[in-house]
Image 1 (cartoon, one colour):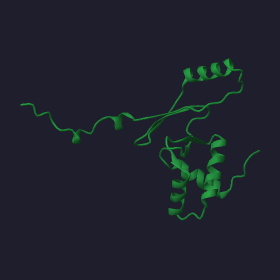
Image 2 (spheres, rainbow, N blue to C red):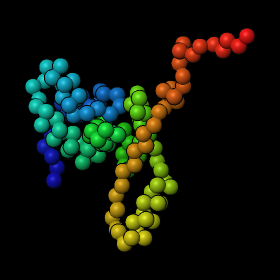
Image 3 (cartoon, helix red, strand yellow):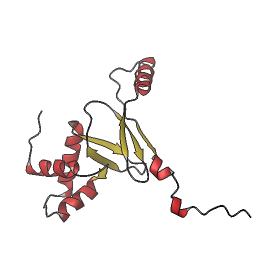
Image 4 (tube, rainbow, N blue to C red):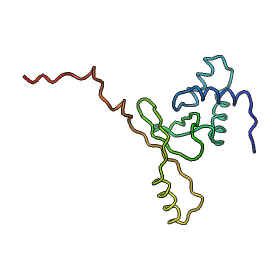
Length: 140
């Protein structure tokens, strides 16, 4: 069943399109309100859920358990590398994960198995120590 494209859903979609990285429903709601939108928080949650279900948005659970969303830039099934510090997200294919998931499901008699793989870590920029905070070696 196709969902109706209401002004609220369109407002959420547009706000998500202009957001870098993943964002929570509450943060997106706050941004919408700051721009003058009267949209309710429950409506934002519902619209984000609908966008994620239709494949128009990626959804993942943060390490803290919070649902986060972003506009989907890749059609079809994919996975993410996500920086825990700055939120940089890279969409990746993981053929080994796909093969493993399919094999392990079949081994246990499961069919139509689905999975989500999001890998959290630190990106290169966040891992690299800042040159200004390093003190020179004062061996003398």
